[in-house]
Length: 82
Image 1 (tube, helix red, strand yellow):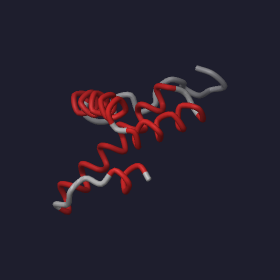
Image 2 (cartoon, helix red, strand yellow; image 1 turned 90 degrees about the vertical axis):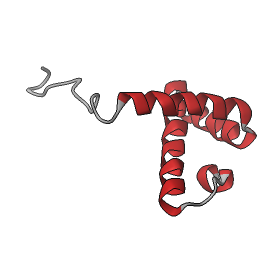
Image 3 (tube, one colour; image 1 turned 45 degrees about the vertical axis):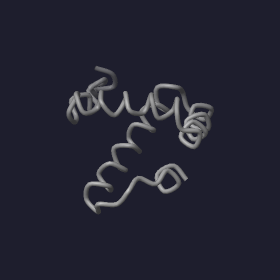
């Protein structure tokens, strides 16, 4: 408790932890093997910090996967990370 407010109860249990892990792994490999994604990650890491940059890449990959499955279109790096 601080100032009558509870702290540390954000959205820790929000979403599927296994899916989150899978997208984090995908982000790790995407950063290693895709120059466009690596450039985006480096820019984001300079502005914030490394864990936030990793999670941002994972979130972008998750959104791209949803778009691919919904619209049945191929993955476009420029559209996702441009």
